[in-house]
Amino acid sequence: MNFHHPAPFYLYRRCLILQKKKKNILEDWISLQLADAGLREDLMSNDELREQSAELLDALLQGITGDNLADFNSEGLSPVYEILAGISISRARQGFSPRETGVFVFSLKDAILKTLIIELSNDQQALADALILINKFLDNLGIATFETFIKGREEVILRQTDEISEISTPIIRVWDGILALPIIGTLDSARTQVVMESLLQNIVDTGSTITILDISGVPTVDSLVAQHIIKTVAATRLMGAECIISGIRPEIAQTVVHLGIDLSNIVTKATLASALKYAFAVLRLDVKRIQKEK
Picture 1 (spheres, rainbow, N blue to C red):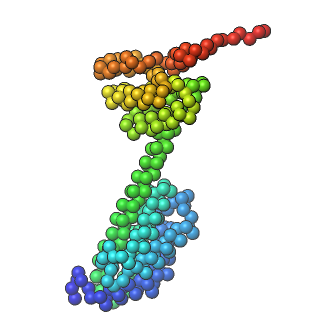
Picture 2 (cartoon, rainbow, N blue to C red):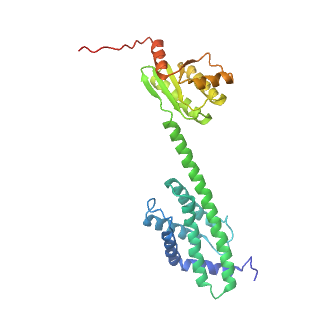
């Protein structure tokens, strides 16, 4: 017998063995998962774990045949990959680690190998062929699991990054016609885009004519950050609103001068209070302190 290309009879025989022992495989698989030290009962109940396991095992045993066990791209295995992809993405979103998700697939391999070792103990050649095929097949499922999990985790990270960007760039309506945008942290191209879109939309929604861009929370200003700020000011002006930059610390002023960045056509103030006072003057608003009568 050719070791790498076993006869179809043996392939069908192994598939029939697995289908016949489905209940045993499922119970062994569940037991292995529950016994794992990294089991996350806080993220998934035992009933949910059993439901996912049963669904994947059913699709697997229905999809594999003697002809496609060695063909990872077989059309009959599409439902298996679809179910596995759904589980991987779901676990990525729930907060499972790659290891915890990997255990799900590799403990299935252990359960299947255990069954084959018992059932084919009297036929060492068939057992050896089966172990090689199943190992390769389940390892491929493991790779597919990790690939999908990574995509799911990347989606989560991108969504969280967008949410953090929105939270970290709050636009405050400090007075009728005056908006303030305090920026905290670094200002890169992606965040500048979020800032612009949010700021311009608020200008339209509120009909504001003055915006204050406060950069006191920006740790450093280099040429790239300065260009992002200038672009934001330009976009604001195109919407018919004047933009004031506040929070110019001494070190930032020195950096801007050293870099040769021209901010002469932009109103700049050292503090947010100074910028607000200037905005009041532009709008011809007079704020006075009133002494309470005793």
